[in-house]
Length: 158
Image (cartoon, rainbow, N blue to C red):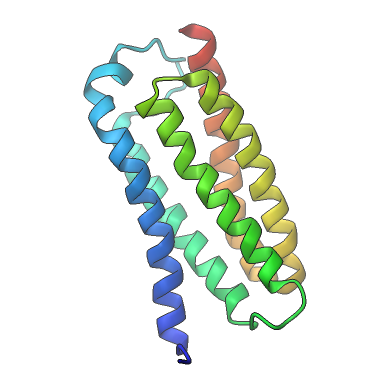
């Protein structure tokens, strides 16, 4: 069965939003309890900021993946690029699991370092296929860079 343009876009965005939802299953219960008890650096954003930022990033990620998928799975590099995309999405969800479910800023820090490199590799792969797809992932890399620093300081302070 051939999926049309809008179907591919919807699937791409929904997969990314689903990853965000899975992460929130681990995150939400810990925010008022464990996370509230942690020492955090002065530059820690307010809790209400995370959900809208991540939602926007997941939408951009979905559009980015869609632009690559649109080139066709038979085109050179598309499957590999989407494989890197899927890998970084898995590490994204795992970060929430390690940090919020396992209550381990250290394991989360190891995960986010791997995640950062996977995002960077995905960006490089996407740029080879579609410049816009690569550009759409830049805000994600910047946010994860900030989140990495934040994760490090939470680990060090606790």
